[in-house]
Length: 200
Ligand code: DX5
Ligand code: ZN
Image (cartoon, rainbow, N blue to C red):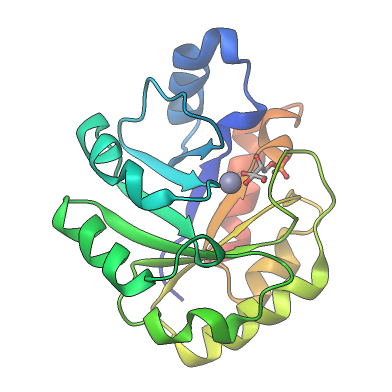
């Protein structure tokens, strides 16, 4: 299993204090800051795991690279030319991630699994934080982990300390959690529990 990376989803942070919230998460041990991008509004992106939930992700590659994003993840459902987009992301100096929504089967991304740096398996329908994790989606994680032992596999949606064991056992090693971290009474403790489950 590749190394655990914990990515607090900033969608659950207090936007009025975004910079402070980001610093707080870094101090508590976050490996990435997960930035969900749904609208044409992004002012700060340095060293982030940027999850583009938009219909034409290709148009944002250069802007995100300039803003300093480290990882650019797009939805397979949003592009007709995933291999071409991955090449462009790499050429712009970023890592490339590909994401599958709950209703899309993992077969949809297998042709690019060797080309990407990460696969994001959505465990809720994308849109907003605070939803319940869909356990069926973990079957896709299992299938992918069996084929790709060294791949970074990220899960996003409804993950928290109560279900991390399931996600980690399925093979996820990059863990996004919004409510699960920001809504936990001790966010630093939540980060450590999430990491511990993956590392175990
Ligand atoms: C959902 C977003 C997630 C969301 C996760 O569409 O992609 O990153 O912020 O939030 P929680 O962990 O609360 O489900
Ligand atoms: Zn996300």
